[in-house]
Length: 401
Image (tube, rainbow, N blue to C red; front, side):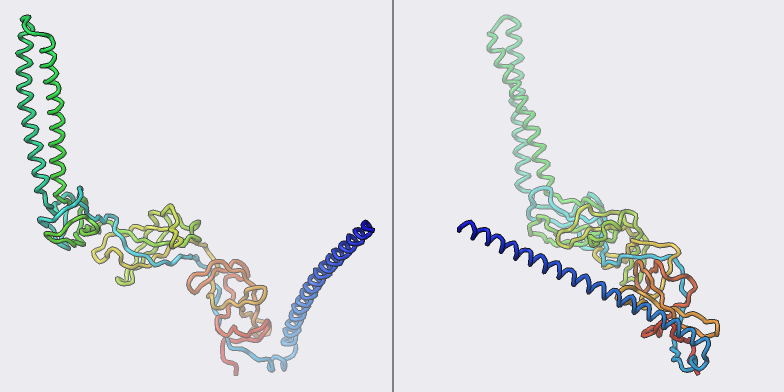
């Protein structure tokens, strides 16, 4: 009995699964049938519209009354042009200097005793800018030199003893131990003298760190320190060399394959109403994790009117097409399938009608767009009045009587 119950349960489950599979298959079939019916209706619609346009054109040719009754739409036209097309990436950037130096002390810093530079003053590389408190370091130099002199005196005495002991040993007087001891004292003091010499050099070098020098030539753009204050660097003195400038911008990472060194750049300085043609001189090798972009630099000529951090507009050329068909971007319309424009075409009876042209477009820059296919040079593009036009509609560039 138990076995019969198990068989019945299995059969019930199989029946349910088969029923679900059939329902799923029926559901997919319904979707496919609906799609096929929709596509059929669209094809019939396109075919009907084409036949209507054809009959309208034939009617205009054979029935003068039909031509009079047809509504003529006023339009403006322009010939389709062929020209070199360029696409730029427009970015906000800034001016930067190649050589900007934030002066820091060579040592630990200290209290300022004298300042030899003012803001806006030209400075040269190696010029003395500040003198820090050096009293303790001078004492260390004096102590090191005194120690050195003391060792020199001891060494002279030890050498004298060694020479005497050697002379006695040569005459057979004294012991070998006395001679070795005298020679060892001389060697030890010579080592101490060498160490003391190095100590004096170190003390003098530390003393020199109290003098703060400029490591570049330029203009003292920031001098934010006074006598008596502690100088530790931290941007207190900034030297800017504007003889070598660059424009810098952050480029979104999706353009990483379109920009490289040597890419032409147009740098515009709105405040000066000035434009500079240059090229990318450096690209960063990593993506900024916060701005999700990479930095590009373009060198620009030195100019007394340009200042570091001044705003600029950088236009980087990332695409070109020679002898491209271009049209105003606002003339393009779209339906559920295609992008299209209208052109004006002359009929044999002297009338003009609108023709719908399906087009494929490329890049868009500013107010123009590159047309890959669908238009030819010289065609009369309808640039105004194209709204609500239909295929074969009578059009005119002059007001009808």
